Image (cartoon, rainbow, N blue to C red; front, side):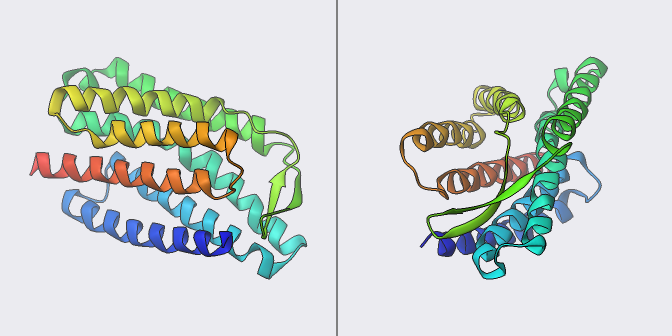
Length: 217
């Protein structure tokens, strides 16, 4: 059952990636908002490797493929900070045009990437883990949620701003659902749960990007 869910998630992200490419072609490919494509690509890879884990089996190959999952997470996920700033910039919000905020968002993004590389990637040690019929390689050390917390706060603030300024609710709703999923995950032991809520967040981000493109056109 869980493997089927991860296959569903992989296919869903591929469809979302194609949708994002179509939106990006209308708005221009060389824009900061297109960093979302990197995040989606990382999630395609992440769920695909998890889905194939038990078929590949324990060993060096799956461990190597799983190591890339952690690299993509560390390098791509913090760019959501820049994505959030760029959305505000293209929507014409004055504060986003100021150099101070631009430097702050870029610095925060680079800082989070650097932190993840030092805290999670350096000295990364993976071990096989079977959970509900799914085989993955997971970090021996418990992960630090600082990056996720900061990104969640930034997206929530931008989502609330868009709700007040433009009556656009979906980014804020997506973040709230992600928070609810995190709380449920503490009580319900179902390995794909966070991945499913993560999918809803990505959909809300893409809806936000589409809103920005439509607003500019």
